[in-house]
Length: 282
Image (cartoon, rainbow, N blue to C red):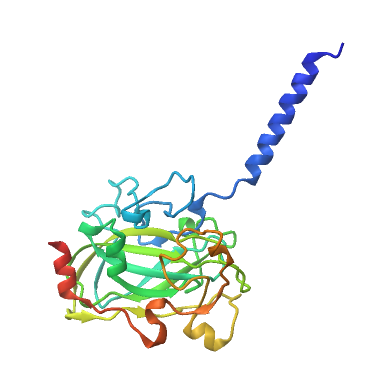
């Protein structure tokens, strides 16, 4: 008769080995994709459309902002905002690279506090677009995220001059990431937010949103011609809402040089007016 105990032990060892192998094949957590590094984000993780993911975004369509993590901390409430800026001020916004190449767009918005989690409001009050691979720089500490080479991205933006004093949510969304060598679309859109305050500065009635591909250093491995690099971005999609979820059809999209849909053919987004911000508070 064959002894049972050795077989049982062998089965347990096989099961344990299989479990370890399965664990090793699990993809890195979505928090390893990207968030705002400065000013302090409301949550250390981003939010996105990933099946089975526990981290949910708040707001219609689940694509606005992560829930605020530890709201009593400085930088995560309106009594102690993460930053205070003046109208017209140039600000360097930093975000985590996390080993990802220079593919995709970043869109920035400043939304009245009342509309913190509104996807529509972040679309309406978007004020700046840039290439994901902008402002290549050395980083320290938490700003590096999971980046093996301790590098990060940044964008120098101008705060709209039409925005009134008050509390706002800075919205960041990265979309269009794919293979760097003109490969295919790979990631959904990733969202992150910070609580900021606007105070002072020259006030105007209107301000026109801008697309500035790169400020600061370009990524050293950026593909394409100089003209393409200076005027366009490598991306798998030119707008939000098309491939916020990476479906099989989206994964067939090729990465190429393009500009955001809002700026194609010489178009510009609707100007942001002082009245728009004031009406949104009512």
